[in-house]
Amino acid sequence: MRVALIHDWLYTKGGAEKVLEAFIEIFPNADLFTLVCHLPENERDFLKNVKINTSFLQNIPLSKKYFKHFLPLFPMAIESFDLRDYDLVISSSYAVAKGVLSTPEQIHISYCHSPIRYAWDMYHTYIKEHNIKGVKGVFIKYTLHKIRIWDVISSNRVDYFIANSNFVKKRISKFYKRDSTVINPFADTEKFKFFAKKEDFYLTASRLVPYKKVKLIVKAFNENKKKLIVIGEGEELKEIKKIAKKNVEVLGYREDRELIYYMQRAKAFVYAALEDFGIVPIEALSCGTPVICYARGGVLDSVKNKINGIFFYDQSIEAINRAIEDFEKSEFDYEKISKDAQKFSKENFKKEIKNFIEEKTNVRL
Image (cartoon, rainbow, N blue to C red; front, top):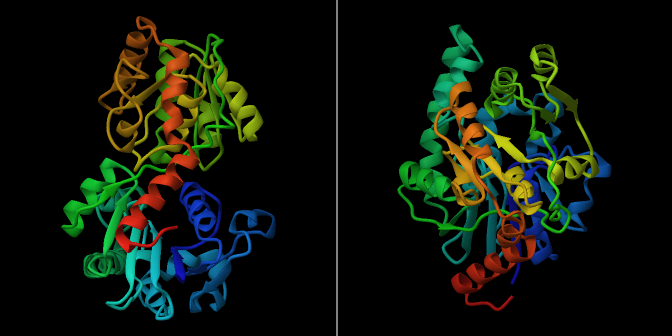
């Protein structure tokens, strides 16, 4: 069985790329198709020896720096791939990868990280946060309008959808009117090992960008005076360092070894973002560390209130601090938290994916 793997684009190795790596391990002889590949050579190990095919966007001058400015061309670029020689098409899609053209004889399975968020449910947030207005604003809004139309049309090219969370499953149903099967992504549960001894500090770790709400967490700890450690880098790093009081330690970027050290010892991990799924909370749980989180989005697939974490229901300073007070009155079984998190292992993910594909293709992998 000849297999084509489709991925939106390759710039860095994030959560979606880890899923792609798992697909490559399942299908080591597959060919990979992606709009552009600008990964540094030292970050390409996960691609193994897979053959990489890029679109015409790869050769446009300045595409490495300004790639996302070519959004109007993305549908045309993804449709330019000729996949007629393949039996099975698997797209790993958070933008346009699912829009490839296939024949009635082929099976197309799409692992959907999310429908295009800035074109759908985050559209108005995107417009507001980027202060989009004037002639440029009209062009961007018109482009996203056309992308939404294409996005719905191209969803009909997929034979079977896999959603990465129940949150995304609802989006697929809402925007595409399609059913999907939920198979959660995985965390490195072998690296993020259980550690029973907790210390008197809280931890948050993520990219320091507005929607992650790390600045909100810092403001909450400025008020409650409890010790917080912040790990991560991004556009808000300088501002977060500026507003952080003495009880908040902002470490910036740290390698996994240090992140794991703090994650194992934190009394709780604090998470305020609205995410499609959320890998970092799984890493915390795998260490046996409870998660205090915003009770919306994909995190609800992994965190259960009063069992392995505490929920707050508004993205506000008051709600976070009430949840922390609730947490400090609660007791948790750290070992059980870690044990339950092992279901999010890479091996379990690959097993579920294989079972799904075998069921749909009637081919034993």
